[in-house]
Amino acid sequence: KAEIKQRIRGYKDPIDFYVSKLTEGIATIASAFWPKRVIVRMSDFKSNEYSNLVGGKAYEPHEENPMLGFRGASRYISPVF
Image (cartoon, rainbow, N blue to C red):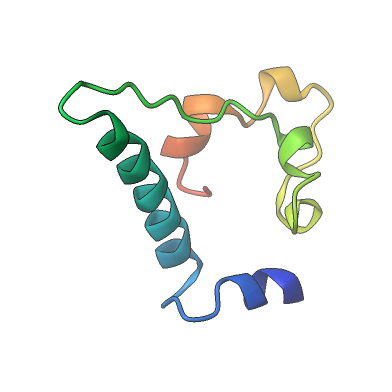
């Protein structure tokens, strides 16, 4: 959690950090191909894959079968995300 706190320093909150980084990344990709259309595909990581990232073990649920769990589009529309 300390490393996450360090990484989001200067942002209003973790949500602001996430949205800012996501916006920056998508804008960078889209601007490189302007004026062509760009399709952006979001991550389909499973909870066990996210748990291997910095801070992941503190936030990701343990699932018996991550292929059937909290992943893909269902993650992005979930209130707990």
